[in-house]
Structures are given as structure tokens and as C-alpha cells.
Length: 422
Figure (tube, rainbow, N blue to C red):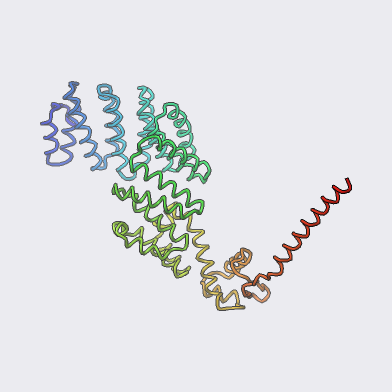
């Protein structure tokens, strides 16, 4: 960086933009910021220089320089309105966030800015940086620290009645409790976010986020039809904004279709006008799972898990439902294999399904207890005996009804005799 400063003028900005390479542009912009002038025009030019500089540093992946820039600009922040300071600070933090593998640096940067905003008594900016810090801590799986930070922040923001920030914080709290597997508190926080959102205008992206979280919570409760509706609303919002989260909303829509045994609809949704825009590995993974589900093939399902591990097992939302989906497919596969038999060796079924005998035996006993089919296990002979579906004998319900009616008659006669004796 050169020690001589440049005049804070539009010509200097133009010189920086027309420089031969980004390093030269960055050097010129730093020299503009070193200009001691504090006239309104100079301040305006410096704000533009900061925006251009943060963009260039982001493109160069110079996260540490962005952090140092934020520290260097603190005297400048005393010369401009607090709202503009908040905009610049949040812009630089967003620029750092776009650089890969900087989560620890972002956390450190946010903690520094929280300390500075407390010292400068900039409450508005501090609350937003703290909300950002809580989100970063949650992504880093530092749940206790994130929860402590949010608890104090929610009380403070509710006193100030800042509805827009309250929506963000309540939504973040819902995600945090969901990550901690505390579903009741996650639902309560989401309800609070919806209540706050109903009182103000919520940007479409934020409304899409609320719908996405609603869908996730309903899916967790196995209410897949309602979850599908919310995922669809989120998908429409993100699709209109060309938000990358649209593909995940569509992916979860397909998951809901599979979970309610409507896997045949998956191909139609993917080939629709909206679905074709997002054709890629995420949708291919769900289509493969849907095909395995339609064919009731456990082998195809396991192949899908192996081939699309990043899209299925490493996605925390999909991964939560894979276990129940695996059980469903295993049950369907076993039902398909035992359909032709009235008596069959368990070892033969294990060979057909390519699973260990003890695993198959345990699952069959569970299915019999759950009344998935009528049968019994002959463990001595190592066989499964399947019964025909038992037909309910009409005499038993009729007998129970008759006994119930006789009981009512006896009770009535007892009451009448008690009145006569009295």
C-alpha cells in the first residue's frame, strides 16, 4: 500500500476501475480511503471506494484483508450516519461469508464487531451482528453458545419491538432447537416468527425461509402432505427469486411424495416446467430413491445411498427420514418375497434379499407383531409360516353387542327396583 493518498473524487474511482489488474485497483482504493478529507462529497466517494474494495478483496479471496479493512475503517465510521455504518459493516461481513472455508474467521470477526458496537453504544448494529454470530455458531455446531446468545437477544429485541429482526431471530431459534432435537420448542419459536411476520411486510425470501422451516417440522412429525404444501410454497418463492435454495425445496417435495407412497409422481414433478430448471445431481438422487421405492428394491435403494451419499446421507433433513424409508422398503421387499409362499425357510428369504439371516428373522418377527401380515416363526425348523388373512367372524361382535345390551337392561331394572323398594 502506498503512503501517499489520492484525492477522494470520481476520477480516482474511475482510475481504480480502469487499472490493469485487481492488485493495482485495490492499491488505488486504499489510497483513496487514506485521504483525510471529511467533506460530504469526499465521504460519499469513500463509501463507493469501500464497496468496490470489498468486492475486489472478495474476488481475490482475501478474507483477512477484509477483516483488517473493517478495523481500519472505525475512525471513518464516526464521520458518517449510523445507518450507513451498519450497511457497510454488514456488507463487509457478507463479503467474507462468500469466501469459502472462513467460518472461524467470520465468528472471530463478528465477536470483534460485537465488542466494538457495545463500546460505541450502537445497539441497532450490535443486535444484527449478534444474530449473524448466532447463525454462524449454529452452523459450526456450537449449540450451547448460540442458544445463550439468542436467549438474551430475543428478550432485548422483544422489548424494542423490532418485528423484522424478531422474525429472523425466532426463525433462527427454531432451527437451533430443531438441530437439538427439541421439536416442541422449535415449533413454538416458528409460531412466534409467524406471529411477528403477520404484523409486518416480510420479504419473499424470508417468507420462503419460514415456509421451508414449517415444511421441515411437519415432515419431522410424519405429516408429509402438509409438509409438501409448505415446501411447494417455499419452492415458488425461491424459484421466483432465483434463490439456490429452490432446488432443496424441490428435493424435499420429492422426499414427501416418496414417503407417502406416491413415488410415481416424482418423475412428473421433475419433468414439469419448473422442475426442468433444476435438473441435476440433487434431483437425480431423489429420482433414484423413488425408482427403488416403486420397485420395492432394497438393493437399488442401497445403491442409491452409496452413489449419492453427499445428496442423501449428508443432507441432515433427508438423512432424518432415510431410516424410516429404509424400514418401509425392507418391509415391502419382504412382503413381495413371501407373497408366493405359505411356508418358507428364513435362510432362503435372507439369500433372496441379500441380508444376514438374524437381521431378516428379527424384522419378520417385528412385522408379525405389528400385524403387517398373519404368520408365525418356527425357530426350531428355521421357517416362516404364513397364514391366510383371517376373516372376522360376525358372531363375536354380535355377541359383544348382545351382552352390552343385557347389561344396560339389568342396570335399568336395578334402578327401577331400588325406586320401588324406597
